[in-house]
Length: 181
Image (tube, rainbow, N blue to C red):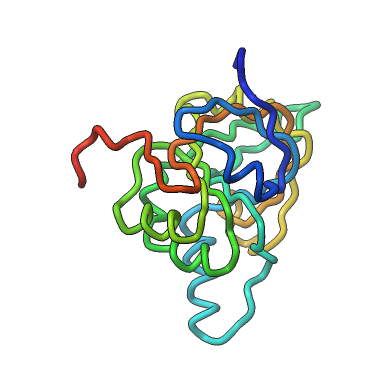
């Protein structure tokens, strides 16, 4: 994305608090990749007194499930999942130290409030661009729950991964023009 700011992961506090709604950025570094079933398993484990399977502090979670990679690539398609499906887990993930979430579409008022209180970001990637986004992955490996296949928790090393700030760390929100739902 021309005119985009390069942002190193993990996010430094000054960078996180300096990003603004609508800003186009290119991510570089490591992020966690997980979807519905991994969130459910983390939450269920914590409710039973278990420790989380990974350290979530200062992490960005990308809501996605990778497809198998074609020859010569680290990942196949890696398009964003509808973020609202993980809204119920946002308060817990923020308590665990997550500082940014990446998906597609608007978030619930409760999820937005939890992110604003934690100073966490919500970033959006273009739905339908999974092949392009997968091409930005340099390395992808399972960290936890391998039995979940594409819903496992992955670590992705990315370079120039394009996204837009949809909620900044102060609570400014890109989708504020939409009706609550």
